[in-house]
Image (cartoon, rainbow, N blue to C red; front, side, top):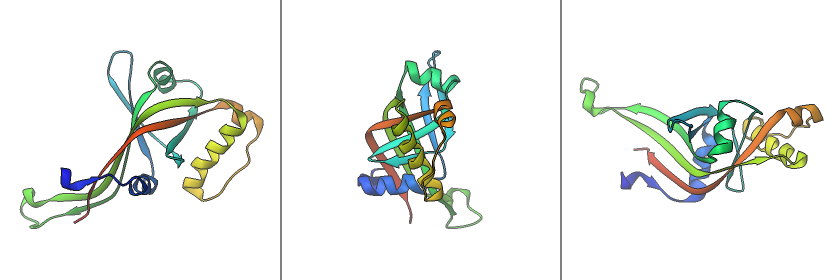
Length: 153
């Protein structure tokens, strides 16, 4: 619904950062949707992710780096009449980020990206040993379009 549309970028990023996880959607070789939940961090309007260096997700992203990332938070069931199913609705805030994955290989950039993720969950930075940095795949979603919806009444 147009009346629920959110377009203010700081509000969209604030909503995304309230989320515990994001869901990254991509398209596999059979042209089928593939969606996975992930931990994330956001910095400079880009979304940072990490995973194993190999697997289905990485294979797909290397071939087709276009993604849509979904965030959803502040869910609260509401109703006008407990006995009328059609009076129920859900308060929420949601964000979609459309963009392209870029893999990060530089050691210092990887550490910065991992700390962006860790800041989101712990509020602090960490140090990482070389084997840990080498064994993890780190990537950013360069967002070309943010969009959101909010139903908070």
